[in-house]
Length: 367
Length: 197
Image (cartoon, rainbow over all chains, first blue to last red; front, side, top):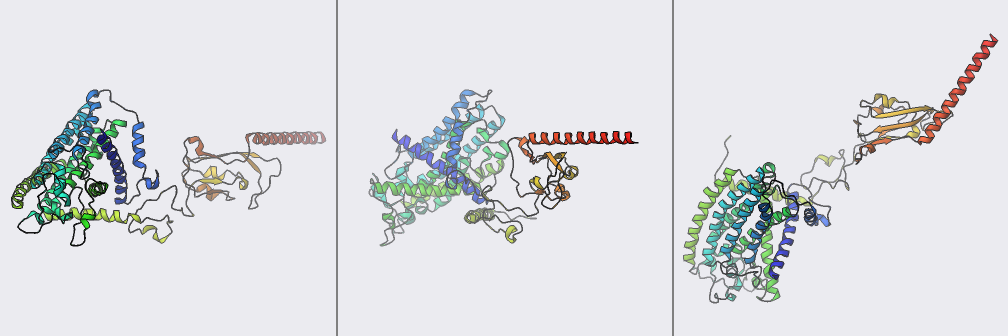
């Protein structure tokens, strides 16, 4: 229960920061100023937006399927929020550490699609319906390259446990129960004879242990943009043609929940990208000879220092990825539906399949 | 025209797009200054934010800019020229002849009329500035104020008269009385001439 509340509060804070960052980043990239009035540099703008939404009337259209309409936002948010349960925030803190975390995450996020369809259908509005159908088609399609990309990372790590994957990518590897004797080799190759277990830092991140995962990371990141309905894959919500997509009929608190779910999804996919590819909560600095950069920025497991460093690195890497998401949104125009499907089925999926195969071979070399 | 295509071309163009937005993001610390159009740097802003925080900063208007009208009623001789030239009929003037000496305008013209009503409907005004050019005493001028929106459209009618309704009524009565007296005097003089003739 405590983990639930803490995660919820932390998520709300991150989402509010993200909403503010989105407005400011968008403004700066377009040579505007963004919010300046509410609080210093407009920093309270996002808070005020939420307060405004909470005060608005809760409208349920007369011709809507009221049960579905009311249930949909809760289901959408619950599906995304449940994904956070298996995310390891620090070496010792996982809301619910289960051995099949990756599998659980993929399946619980797929539930999101049902919520979207409920919202679109329940609204009894053609724009909402079109938006929901596009959204579902897009998410279902992009789950395949995203899933394959995650699969190759899982194959390299030989684990479905996010925490185990995290421990593998850093100095603390031998402190995870069951991995006491394991060793990290440069590029994952024992033949090279360079033991990086005590070097840590970026040399033990998955993208460095198996450089192949760099391609996988790009594939996953593109697919995750599509899964969270972000530009340039935002055709489900295309403001200029569908008004707002599946949530066009929602107002007030329900809209706030949908908004929160959307931004939580962004945070979640970035967290997963960081954990699977970018070294999770591990420091990016390696130990180089006498310079103990990694050790001094890792802290001790189980103590406050370990918690703080872990959380700090995980969050800062996530924020970098989130910034890239915003950056992409304000750079690229929206894809057409056929371009979207072309990219998914003819480019990303074959590439992801090839990478899965190569990841298997790489794993054989790593033994 | 033939476009280059292929994987690396696409990657290159995607990256160049990201570089562009990144440069704008990085240079967002520079801002344009609220300088007037006469300033040399007005049309030269190579980088940085282009917007101003308007109510706090504003671009100064040029000296010959045509914005809200103002009538200096002390200098007005109520000649009605402005109301006549106005293409949209936004100026309404009523005049009452003064019975006594009411002084001079600041440029030395003698004032002979009171203006119980001198209204300009700024909602109708087309900002052509004709009224200011015809004004013989230069009392009607264009000011640099351009931000004067109102919640109630009635407030867009500006009243420039310096008489209260009671004073205006008083002046009207005075004029009537004087005219009656003059008429009576005229009638008396006529009767006297008839008698004499």
